[in-house]
Length: 253
Image (cartoon, rainbow, N blue to C red; front, side, top):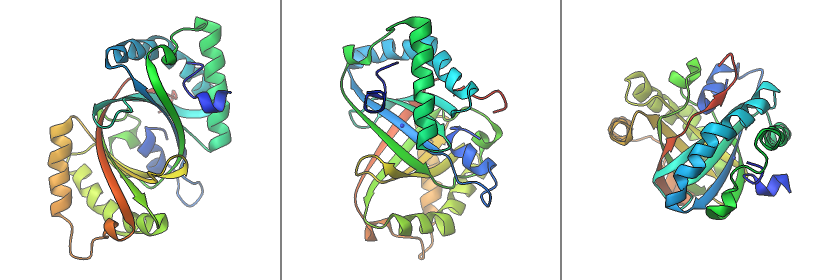
């Protein structure tokens, strides 16, 4: 646990989209998302999952109970690139996220010592901070854990402001209709704050991959001729599917 966000120790809650919807957008900005991604041996993913369930969750809960983090968890590669283990946390801003990481690390070390070292099972690591955009009003807004499955559509864009305007003014309403129809549990977007070149990331959550894909078909079919065209301001694109592990949340979530 102490080594999961290596760069920063030497990614109402996610409930990450739900926190955005639940807040009064005139009085508070959406929270930030921190993701720590790892390239791990496929045979070791289960070991890391057990470590999160048994040790990481209680340690993360200490950061949540202390008020630094809103929620924290992990999502695993189902069909995606080689970054197959991804720890995440949400907080008010980057200082709060880093404060929560210190609290989580300290709680892990105090209770479990060195515990499980991801470097024994993984070859590469990267961290990133993202600003959450406006999400749909779905199950996660009611305080449920995210997922259980998530599709992420990542883009390299030259005009993030234009993408955000298109999402807020047009596309989010189309996504909301899919959520309201019960095909997705939530949808939203997060933008690069301090991360890699994939600076716009749309997410769509549902029960499983088939339900997410069925919702996608509905989503695309609903687009009119005036729908924003991402290819005008974005150059590259990739998709991935991920499965959530257990989520640590506040008592009121």
